[in-house]
Image 1 (tube, rainbow, N blue to C red):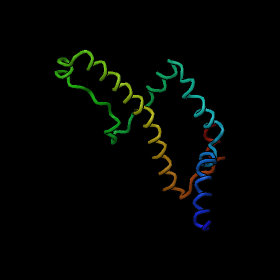
Image 2: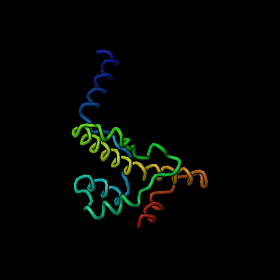
Image 3: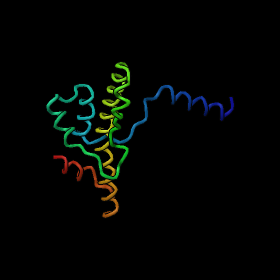
Image 4: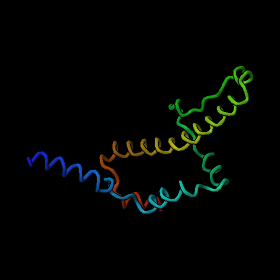
Length: 129
């Protein structure tokens, strides 16, 4: 068997057998949050309080929720109105989840511009405590 064939087989075996490749671990507190929140969710009062405090930046127009014109809404069938309301709720949830990530990216960019380096995990964990 040729060396190139062996290398291809070895690569295929590696792709099939080995676990998914991962990046370095997150901070323990962040990992706990990421692992538990999707499964358990937030209780309703905590969720409402959290959502109230999330606002989009003034220069991010795509984070604003789309509203249906009242004239169109009035002539739409009930099934269409129901589907649109559900899609708006999904859009709102996605937007409320993306806004903090966008703000984090902005903060990281500012830190990099000022210091030229990313804070170490120890510095980050000190800020989370």
